[in-house]
Image (cartoon, rainbow, N blue to C red; front, top):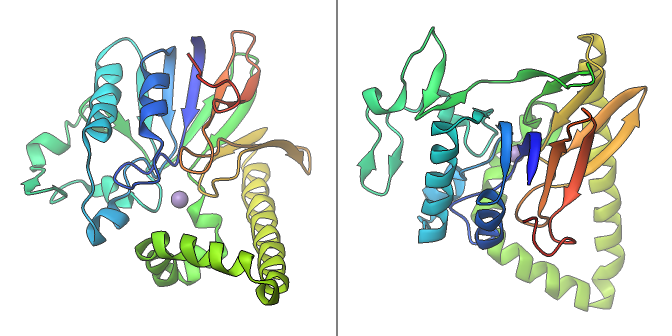
Length: 259
Ligand SMILES: [Mn+2]
């Protein structure tokens, strides 16, 4: 599949939830000029609690490094689960610690992991001339900013809370409570969307491209194009820039295979 640009986020390598096989299939069949990794690519948080790194996850990381070694420019904007990529030194994969000389190849002051450029956010200008702010989005998540420890705790007990969720939804007494929880979660996402769009508007962008909420979306809010590229845990979505310069959210699950 040939595209100008592809945006992927929230892959969560290092967790059992990552749909690695499908993602690897997708990555093996793409051809683009620029590939954006919009955060939470490697779930370092989760791996601190439980080290999980199967072969498919290694293959994905290797594929991303290979793509960056070719003609495709790969840009990585770390999220909250891989924030330590802003400062790679000392990060450990199993027993292997990344040494300073392996981590950063400083080319004109830029940060690189292999040939993958690491940056806090980026300005993306589409072929049609629209200016987008590209960022993971966690800084606009009020809950995450104020209660980071709760977020981390949720990651720790992710498997267990899923089972708890199944228990609650099967019990009538709790269904009301669950519905109100879903409602407040929706309000929370709405607040996030408005906040991130506000920043984009204030800074003179036409749109914003983000991830973080595992909630794929493509819509206009207060005249600003809001695109959330979703995730590879609950969803299998990416955002692509077509040769026309239009951006499109693609559901790879619906396509069975993006290839
Ligand atoms: Mn995130």
